[in-house]
Length: 183
Image 1 (tube, one colour):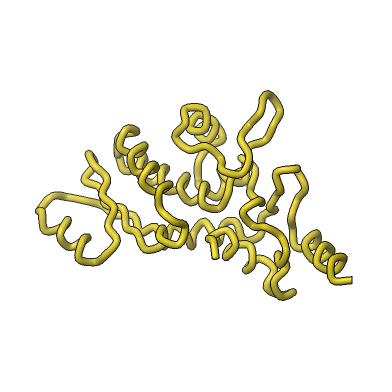
Image 2 (tube, one colour; image 1 turned 90 degrees about the horizontal axis):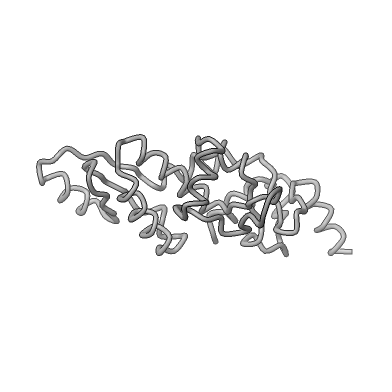
């Protein structure tokens, strides 16, 4: 199950699994919602999309007035980018880290801890790797991706999802869809 599917299915738990029959890989969040969940400004989001740091995976902007659509995974990576930049990691190293995260499977992300000494970013997938890095005697900081995952999931739990065609996917709309298709 993808992170987005996990976030979405928890959103409507009172009514069973409201997104059954809806492809969750094809729903996402508009830019302002992505900004809010990631803790960034719209200006940052726009700049990062235009410079190729992180393109929205659901729907890219297509000219003036069009809306980008970001997946749960995109928003998770946006929040990690912000944390790395806030810690003083160079944009060049952030780009390397983003490339590495995008090459990972969705389920792998929750088990990663990103460590940085300010100059480089290291991807640790086990406690032993974290300890080895710390034993180097250099000052480092870490970002537990699983914890960031839960923060983003909590931020998005009650916010509206949207399909690439512009239709919103909220609890009420999903319940109506499920009811119509069950009849």
